[in-house]
Image (cartoon, rainbow, N blue to C red; front, side, top):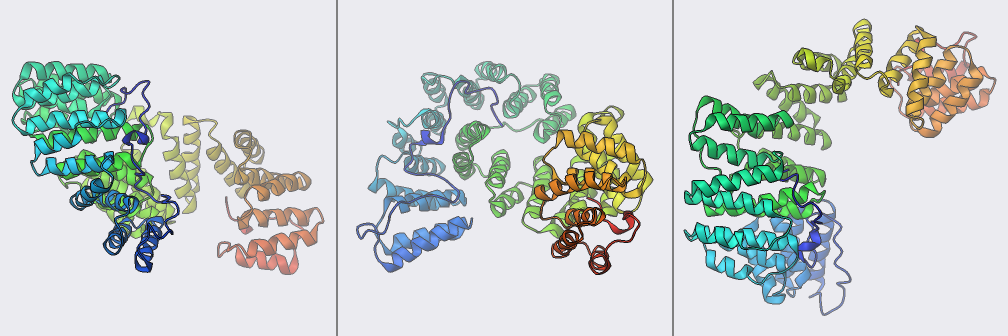
Length: 581
């Protein structure tokens, strides 16, 4: 996010927009619209209901179209008007939204967000004075007042009066948001060629953000590069990358500075400045955990500056968090292929493809990414995880091996990477490479000795193989202590007791496991075996029958069917007739 240390003590709420109801997702309640003074007739009401259903289904494009249809065949209901133009903004059609927002202002002149929408569109068309005039007098809370102050300052820059804009912004009484004033004041001064005041503002913004704002770092570094101070810019970039090592934009800026390539000014005109203002505010609000309102601000920013890929990247993140997966994927895909943000955006697209049950698309995309940049640790991990999710264990193991090969000596001992070796071990175990899998699990435990899932997987594997049973049981006990409500880990413990011939103890744990994870066929199968060993044969057959109806793995089916027919032999079950957890 842009400003991680601003708005201390300040609640940034969506309610600050003073909207009648502004939310980009589903679940908006229009109240009772069935009265004759609000619904124009059956066709009008049908279009409204169709819009509601489409919105509930996450189809915001159809929802917007149906709301507009309702407006065409019925009265200009203010709530339907607002719903229509808000959805248009969410879909990126700000020009159409502004047209509807103008109609909304005729019905409800006090609607703050309608005024902001129209003002942004007028700004886009170069009507700076009209845009500024429409925003004057708005007083709807800290968030909106800040947005208006920034846009008005940039509107003066649009009229070639950046000094007036700087003075106007500096004179605003906006407690708690001085960082915005410093940063945008610096951008305005930079645009005006006032290098002294620009540097003062950038330094104040860097100081105010504690050096943790990527966007401020980019802007100041950009300024230093353009003024012949590339070495200073590199130091600024390095300081940030020490905090956030994988920020693509700052890393690209550092590479540029080292190469001595002069950049373009970050904000080169008034429209770009206004877009930056909307992006700035959206970044902070998104950092507070809100989704809908910053998403709308980002669409407004992109209307002003379609090249602002930083806004597009954040917008994709927000849509993904709102589970608007199709929209998120489309937004990520629209990022310029030459942007340093595109590679990570493509990885996010692959994750979205997985969420949308488009795993083949995810695998193709990640294969292309690993081919284009074989040194990308992030791409190899995403590729391996996707392959493992599709049970392509051999390819997954190879991809994890590639990722591990990219770790330096220090990273190989970093506890954060335990899950990499754990996932690698699972993939190796599934393709029968047990010695290598065992080594991977044991190395994961050297990085995180009490990790319950590694303890469980290794312990259970030993139990299934009839190896190190006492040590395996002790390991699983440690896992259960940390995850006492995980049915699969408790099943491992029960199955360990079963393998040791302690059937009464096994029944206690396996019953508990089935209570916690009742939908897994292996757990029910295990409980059936334990029941049989303690003489509860009717209950055993019930559990086996239950397991058979739970769609077990193909290799489990004949084994369970044989037990249903003949029960268990005198010898305890072995790893040959049980699948792993």
